Length: 168
Image 1 (tube, one colour):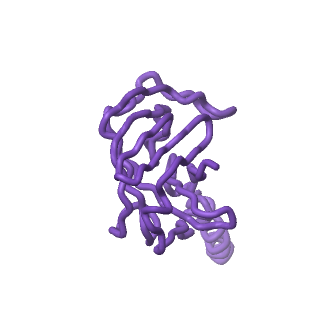
Image 2: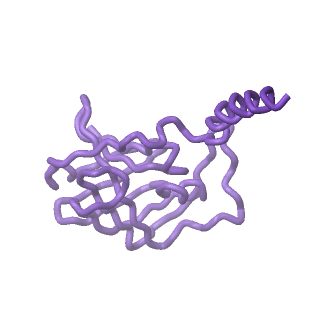
């Protein structure tokens, strides 16, 4: 009987360990990054879903319309519009190893609540309101269609990307 219990423990415990982990299989994938971007490549208008618009100007100022919060702030459901500044940085920040764009809204001009997708819970009425000022750390990736900006939303371990494409 002791032998059966020992064999059962050896089989059940290893099979239950992956089930207990419950993590996204892509949780530890590296986040795309670039190291050769020039500020001049970033100036212009970038668009996202549902009317999101980010304008990065050559003088370092920025205009943002309907941009959702980054990481867990996304779950609050607010969308922010306003003006502020941006800069390209090589300093370690964000999730990728390369360059980043630091985008700061210093003056909010509007705020709204995002409509949830099918199956997504509606943001709580008790949730945090849109902040008056906010900073995003935007990652960058070069692909077949050129440079794109993005940040992680929701739980960063889920690797959900909020993508901004150059308007064209």
